Amino acid sequence: MNKRMHAFRMVRAQSRMWVLFLSVIISILLPSFSAIDCKMSASVTTDMEVKLKALECHFTWGIEKDDIKDRDSLPEKLLDRVMKFSSPNHATYFNLLAFLSHLEENNVSALEYLHKAESALKNRQDDTELLVTYANFAWVHYHSGNMNDVDAYIGKLENINKGVTTAIQGSLPTIHGEKAWSFLRLGGLFYLGAKESFQKALKEEPDNASFNVGYAMVLYRLEGLARKGNVRLAHTEGATQLRKSLEPDNTEIMVLLALQLQKQSRHESMKLITEALRLSPDVPLVIRYVAEFFSHEGINETLEVLKKAVKLSPHSSFMHNQIGRCHKSQFNQMSEQKRKGIWRVNARQIKEKMELCIHHFSRAVELKPSNVQFRLNLAEAYGDNYQLEEAMKIFTNLLKDESLSDSDKQQCYSGFSLFLFFRKKDEDGAVTQFKKAYQIPIESWDRNKARKRLKQIANQKRVGEASEILEFLATEDKKGRNAEAPRRVEVHSSDTDDLTDALGKGMKLK
Ligand SMILES: *[C@@H]1O[C@H](CO)[C@@H](O)[C@H](O)[C@H]1NC(C)=O
Ligand SMILES: *[C@@H]1O[C@H](CO)[C@@H](O)[C@H](O)[C@H]1NC(C)=O
Ligand SMILES: *[C@@H]1O[C@H](CO)[C@@H](O)[C@H](O)[C@H]1NC(C)=O
Image (cartoon, rainbow, N blue to C red):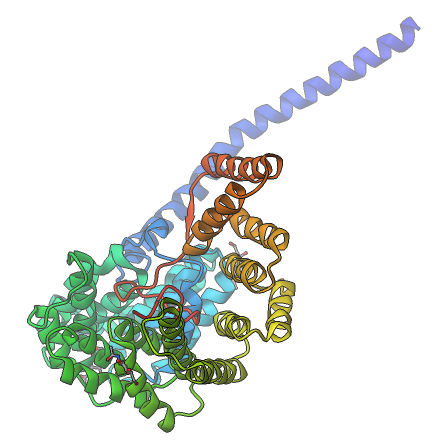
């Protein structure tokens, strides 16, 4: 045993010596190698980084990820703009999409978008229009570790810049314009930056239509954020700029100007809305403003405009839905008057109203079956008309749909519970659905409504059942307090730049 032990110790000692020896050698040699290596690559990289940082593009404009509004839904909105508008801004939006992809650490998609930006610029008048795109290319390649490509793009940029006087290189209107439009799309925290960049661009090219339109939009938004109360004024800088930028085919500017003039110049604003509806009957981002416009108008006026407009665009799902909503409001008024006995109401008239309502909601659903709001409106109208089976079928299909967003689900539960409660007189069923609506932690009209109803129902119940409901609410509220940040349902207003298809949400007709 001693022998074996001894042999083992010898081997261990020898191997220790070897390890020591080797590590001494390595420690002598390595620093000199790696020092040379590091020194070289460090200076190359620093040189490259200095050049990169001097470029004008999304990577150097100080865009903080957390300042971007609705980062998740922004790509979809930008793509929608690219599809719906033949604007000179396509390259700008592709560049922004590339940058957003980079923020998601998706360099493959970032490069794809940059290639799209480049091809959107193929009819350019001037190579300087490529500067921001190529600078973005250089940065994406840098982050991907493709140093040769970084060099290649820096080379291309230097070539383009050769043709430009050094004095104006950093101050090209096209770069200010690109920055301004990007900032306008990034949300409220960037609007002041957008304004400043549009001003710089306009200083160089006061008549450029794109800069004038963008400047009008950013002023409109900033005035909207600053105003108190609901009234926009017709004689602000924003209004003047909107009027200046009005073009026969830019319906977005038309509806913004209409909103701006609505209170003070009704005739002109109605004309603008009518024209915008004629040209863009189904473009969500235009229609959203139109819906806001109508929310400040009377039902009769709205119906009058829409009835004419739908004749020109019989396939506009938006218009059919909106017309349905007008009839629905009138139906509600009539029913209310009948209930109070103030109005010599004619049952036949009420029935006709409801039929009109169902007709238009059905058309809206036929034309756009994917819109949850349209389907809920139709289901509710069927309920009002006591076509319970038809209503039930819509609710069942909606509630089966796994792909709905939480906010849509909440609305469906809420709509369904009201239906069960008022039309089917199924109180227990309604309670179950109200609870489901309440369990989705999105603060909204539907959630508050669910809470109110649950409390009302509890008040009328026997002690045991009542306390079960109240305990449920208390538990959910406690969960809410422990959660990190409460979520809010998106409020659609013209001062932000979101365009979902969920039209009519939160836009109740007066
Ligand atoms: C994307 O980046 C990773 C490193 O972050 C790199 O390995 C990969 O090659 C890059 N892809 C492209 C297409 O550049
Ligand atoms: C406005 O400026 C943009 C960006 O430089 C340019 O692409 C466009 O051609 C200009 N438009 C007019 C009408 O000069
Ligand atoms: C709206 O029109 C109806 C008839 O179509 C009329 O009875 C009602 O008084 C009008 N309402 C307003 C506010 O003008």
